[in-house]
Image (cartoon, rainbow, N blue to C red; front, top):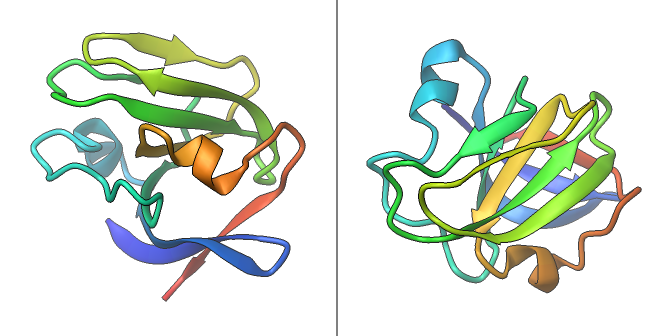
Length: 117
């Protein structure tokens, strides 16, 4: 996985955003890793990805579904372990610590851009 940052309108939202853009990195995702930072300062961007699961996880996450250009399609807050979620039309998925969507004030239509460090 590569490390970068996630921006909205040239403002850095998530300073440490891991990009999972290979089959292996998407398959592993957050499994076996330490929980994401609770201040929404860390996230995982899965690309391409239109659905996620939390099997094997021990904490809830927030999920943001994005189109191919980074536009927010919908969000799912506080997704508990052993759940699945999908969004028709999503091409990218951002995973944050539970509460991250509210902290970042993410809304449908926001445009997010990942930049490498």
